[in-house]
Length: 150
Image 1 (spheres, rainbow, N blue to C red):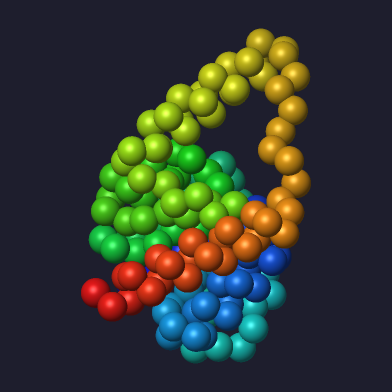
Image 2 (cartoon, helix red, strand yellow):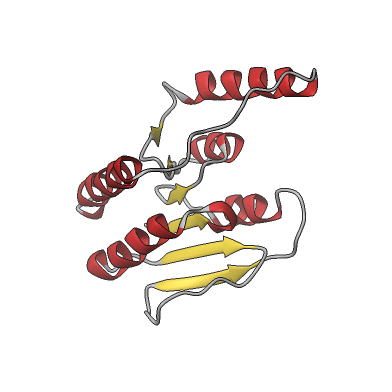
């Protein structure tokens, strides 16, 4: 199993948790972004820089994803593709995407996008807080504990 990170918009506290988990569990973790990002020296942490452009990083993740891999992303359409390809996805707020919840998330996302395109101000997500970071750390730890044994 490998961890892929949709890293362009991944918050630093989440990347720090991922770096520690990669080393602790000896799990290859690859950050995919359209710009170089700082990573600590580790044989378990890699940076993959892709060209700029719409969904270029997402497409690269899907291209390289293997069944059972984990993707960290807030991008709901990417999470859906990951699930369809046999992978797992967790968002930076600690929500594990599943076949049971992904369609609802896609519908809400599409509805909100329709509202925005019609000129309605929908606001956005609240800034990530320490509770979200802790929830992510707990979800990642539970996932790795369960899947590293398999």
